[in-house]
Image 1 (cartoon, rainbow, N blue to C red):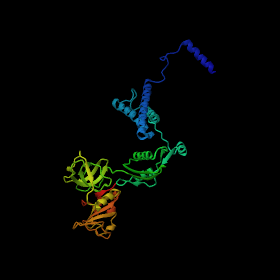
Image 2 (cartoon, rainbow, N blue to C red):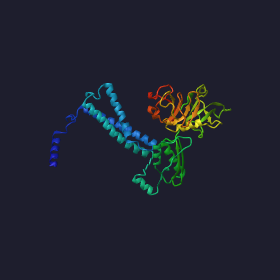
Image 3 (cartoon, one colour):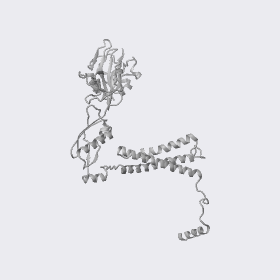
Image 4 (cartoon, rainbow, N blue to C red):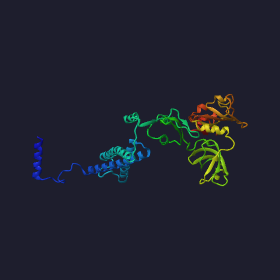
Length: 422
């Protein structure tokens, strides 16, 4: 039957000739034709962008780009182009109105084609980058990785259960330490111990944004000791009154920790190093350090274009600097409160105050009592320095009858924050 139909059609074509393209009735309108061309063009643009992003990401991080990021990167530029066209002309594609079903289908087609092309471009770009840069990554959890491990071609390097902190640096958050403990790195067994340790060190520093790393490995790839740390960045509420935070170009020794008193000297390249000023080290990041100095003219003695040298003073740090250094590593703050007359806390013991009373300043004679005993009685006008979580500032019931330094009651939800940690 099919052969008969084909024969009849062929005879008709031979008798009448091949019809021209103009003679074939158009099945789609001009608007649909233009919309399809634009949808395909935007899809190709999204695929090219996703391919380039996948290549750059694989080359820079040695990892495949997440599929969501690739699709988003591919859809951004077509979406911006369609948006700009609608804002500039008032229509997306003439003669369809901007607020109509046709324009909606056009936008849906652009987004769908861009998303599909972005997903495809991610695969193409990742494969291309692996071939060009000769990247061979094997997951030890896959059957291929297990086969390589069983054949003795690779070795799995796992961090120890306990991860220490590098002296002078901040500890990693708990969730980051858990991820680091569960990390397993698969390396070729043919690598020498030094190269293997260097690869593990560079990989951990890049993946976890580490500023310091101490590593000790055996010849079989077992990590015996691992210590990591990060430098403190940015300012914190722990800025003493009457001081300024200035940045200087220097490379502080590892023995100096944030919160330690320091002396700022001119660089060693000068003929006779001179003492410029003294202060407290707040944070150091690379060749830049932030130092708290006296605000009365001492900051003007420092030149931003010069390099200085930091050193510890000859006198050992006092308990105040040690307390400030410990406070930085906690999530507590020190709030100053003033006891009002005839308040519920007036005449009560220190141990009855919520939080830890770090210091007490008598209102009558100005006597300082650090860490007052629990049976010390509070008097009107006393300044109480309480070590407490930041959330307690919004809980006036915890310090009922305690006023802030401006005389307002705690019900006003105001407080004088003296310092705090993270």
